[in-house]
Each structure stands twice: as structure tokens, then as C-alpha cells.
Length: 267
Image (cartoon, helix red, strand yellow):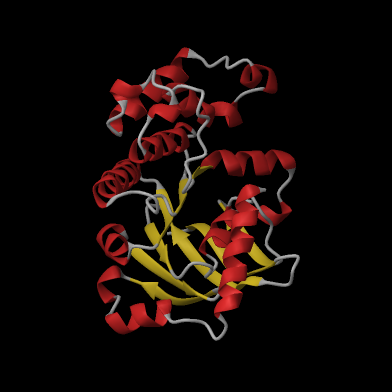
């Protein structure tokens, strides 16, 4: 089966000299639900943001659906971003807007600037948004403002907004980091079930190893900007986990990596 995504020898060096990624390579097949695990500052967020071009890698190549993203034209990049849904740790919702308005923002990549500015969504988009919200158990909250929701509800709206893009690939950056165990399970169930039912590939970064083992079809372990494990969850031994989470020679460098990833998010 041809790869949906190919990441080859990707490096990322920030302006202050920090090497967040040091030659990461892997391929993602259609329908895979890959989970990336690793310590804070290991490079997980940087990798996801390189994939969807929120930031640019320093070296290496990322190919999505046969297109080298670093060489993509404006139109090609717009199409790539349209087909890659992104779910953020801190939700990135617009608090003053309703649930359904936030979900409909997932359609902006398909609209002209004029229609987007004036929120001129068609009936089909609105019906689809309602169906997606029903799938994640949020159909009764459609007219609530986003700032009235719990963290778990906000994240399900984030999933719904990404789904409204009709993506081929879902990226989720620590989607349950701020949630309690029960809400975390609901969010991960929603994300996993939708991806499985619709045949959508996914790359999800998590801190929780138990959740990674439960939901992943494949686990990628990153330490200090390098892949140190890539395989089946059932083969993830205690020794492999220790290797992934082993401290780097200089913990201060990890803190620098983490700070740089946060700056990239802000940008």
C-alpha cells in the first residue's frame, strides 16, 4: 500500500540553535492510528507542526499524498492544509462563538475570502456540522458559546472542527493533556472511533502511555529529537518505555526544546 505520508531525515533547528528534531524518518499508511510518545521537549509538537507546515523544517523532506510540502505552491499548500485536520492541546476555539460556528470554521479552507469573512456557509456544510457534533455526543450543545463548555467538551468541538475539513489525515497535539481520566477517555474514544469508521489516518501525541497502548495501531517513541521506538503497541516493553523516557544528558536542553515548541505554537 502506498504511503499517505512520508517523513524522511527531517531536522528542525530553531533560531537560538536548539535542535528539536535530529533526522526523523517514518512512513504512515492509510488508516493507521499512530501515537507519538516521549518526554516534554522531545520534539513531538515540532514534528506535528512541520507536517502541516505551521513551521518549516530545516532539513529533510515531508511528502503528503505525493506532494513535497516544502516545495508546495500556495495552491498546493492550501490543499494540503485543507486535508490535514489539526487538534490542539489548548483547543484553539473562539470563545465568543457558538459550538456550531466553531465547527463550521473547519470549512474556511474550501471557501472564498468573501464567503469566509461573512460566515456564508451553505446548507450542506451546516447539516454536516450537525451530524459530526452528533457523532461526538455534542448535538445538544450546538448553540452554546465555546466559553461555556468543559475542557472535554471543547476538545470534542475541536475534533468536530477538524472533521468538518473532510481530512485524510488527523494530527492531534496532546489532546487530553489538560483533561481528567474520564474526559480523556471520552475524547480519545471520539477521535479513535471517527478515524476508524471513516478510514482517516491519524498521528496523535500523548504523554499517557496507557492511553497510547489502548488506542494506537502503532507507537512511535521520540527522545531528544530522535525516534527510538517504532512498532506495535503490544511489543512496547518496560525496557522500551524506559529508553523512550530516559533523561537526556542535559535536561536544560529539553527545557529549551519545550519552550521553542511553545513559541512555535504561539506563532
